[in-house]
Length: 495
View 1 (spheres, rainbow, N blue to C red):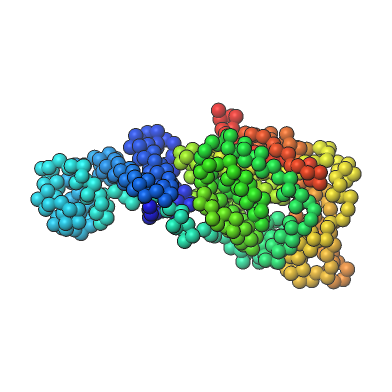
View 2: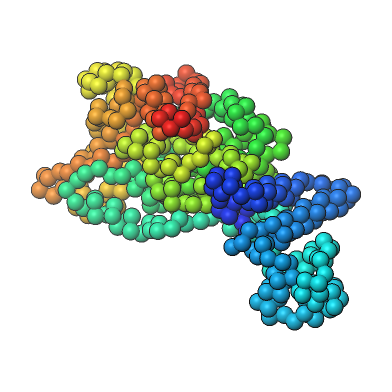
């Protein structure tokens, strides 16, 4: 069975999102919404190689389509259709707008000319079969295309569907120019996304990720199976939109999807990878596509953009509670710990989140909750040794490429105790750049943070995110670390 799509199904249609008030106040809209959802659900059934089932499914889809057509023709409120007018008036207006004669309409619909004339004059009540025949004439446009639009059947169309998007206003060339201007200034702090921006920086970061040590042990200790079972328990057998923010090389996110697939008999997952770095996104996208290429339950999409601007991406912000899907935002691989101000991101970037959405991220735990730099230096083992060679190459690359007068670069740690989440502290990677005339300047190239779990949970609660659990990483070589799962609820002061 092959069904053509009038709109993309991999990006949810904003046509469905009329708002809770609209659905509650209009029985027509409510009926239209649920019948459309039923049509879409029917289209996802797979008859396999059974010809009898295939024919029966085609018949059911046709019947549901006809129900939608009849609903729209007879009950659409004024302004969306002429549902309040007599059918004959509607037919005549649509025929005139289409530039068709009555004879042409009769011929296209397989009706007699006299019958079409009587319909337009109101002398004959429209029979159901006649209405459906007229709805099948495309030029008449008695029913808007999107009313009966079906998602494209994945088996025959997904390889040809658009699956890479650049977000509105995104300009990586200007960002590189901004980075170069900063490098040639007097010093300062580099916004963390800039250090992954160019291709060489992306390659250096991938080498950090794949070297034996912390990152690989982190991935081996990732509690993906336990988390997937929890998601299935909370969400039930629904379609999932997993939006991976800043996925890097995508390996952790792909592994998470693999765990989720094991928990669902008939999975339907839209897997979005959103990253500011084109080369990193390309690597993550390729890995995801190669992994799920033969899996009919997963559609992979790459989006080049800045997750700080997430509310701008309207197509990711449909209302999942009314479309039988659930959305999961992920920020894995220390993404949250690189942010300048975590609460602002939780408040602003996720302002488009709907009730029932999930938020998942991982954090390192602090070795102390005392805001004293000397105690942190004594207790945090990372500070007992110099910045690693691979990190120096990764963080020193942008300086060597864009800072014109740089003669040398050395690295050290600086402790940041002025953090907005109580009990947390930061480790700043400071680059000291040697310049002609024995001058120097400093850049904070990137930051990593340590957290107190209860403070993180309290912070998220202020913005309407309820904690569903914290899952510990395993492995003796893994730093104290947890995976946090939240679900969007109404803030307490709005209950």
